[in-house]
Image (cartoon, rainbow, N blue to C red; front, top):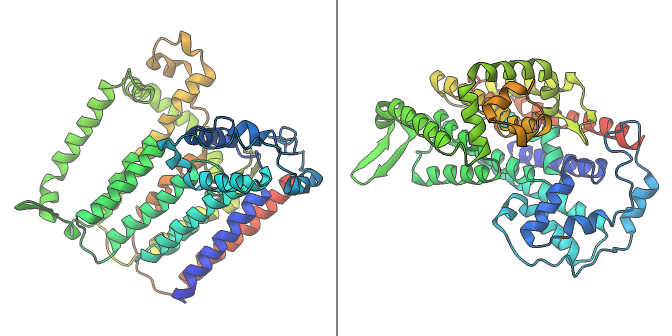
Length: 447
């Protein structure tokens, strides 16, 4: 069963991803055109977005954020075979920027399509399918070395919103793949039998640095190492070693010094970087910040829940609330019964606090966006004043929390419950997710 379980899981993920890329028409994902433009900039192809966008025989704006409008099947079929009219000389790469890391699979797919001189529709499909293939490879790797929590993590891998992101052209395709690998590696260290040495620490740090390069606030996911029992850690440093006894003795002073260092960095660079400036203003206006958090969460918690599980296109086609609640309940149950070891309750509690901190930082990352959308930035005296002027935090979507959602489930208590039924639950969830998502998307775009 174990041998075929992983293969069945990856096969269902592949079917889900391909169906998602075909059912959601091109240019019906927010910022897709912007991401394509950034791929062009990373490859030195300034005209990439403009050339491809103008070579599709579809009226994109007619159905954007208009649920009553449907796709013209004739236009869609024409896009399959339309002879390419883009200028290939303009689309030849002239450079390579480090930012291509954020879009590497999609960029490779697009370059292959351009080299083969395919119709624009198939160039975009290759970009999406290369991103999906990268995600499937990450999921396969994750399931391979997970000693516990496989069922929970597979449900997370199958979140329709996750599949929507990894089967489209955007930076989240790489980000979510790295996050899946990161959380599976943390689980392997926490629940496996291996001693944690410098090699393992290097892998954790490398994954976190890549994740941070794509989205800065997710750096603090590194604090999930608290889930690793300290008895397993042995890091030699010359004649000394960092082990369980050392960590127990120095953990509180190190955490205090790290918090002070973060505060100093935020204060020092508050004028140089807007994000740090917003964080410092939030500290200065703590009561107002708490009010904005409370108002925004109470008014939008249902939307945030749904959009973290499945809100597609231009946020105009959502999965039903019952399915979204079922998703979190199922993942939570699988997390509780999927333990094959013991992580201290104190570590679980700290992990939950880390999740809450990341949740708040994600809110904070949208405050500057709220300033830009609601206020005149040129006349804004300071970010602290801006907090007083905005009525709520705008622009939040549930998908912004997806990279660290597994931490919420890992913070739940462990119960070792055996039974073959545990293997069937995530596979059944995958099938249900495919069916529900297909019904929603067919109803939105095709019937």
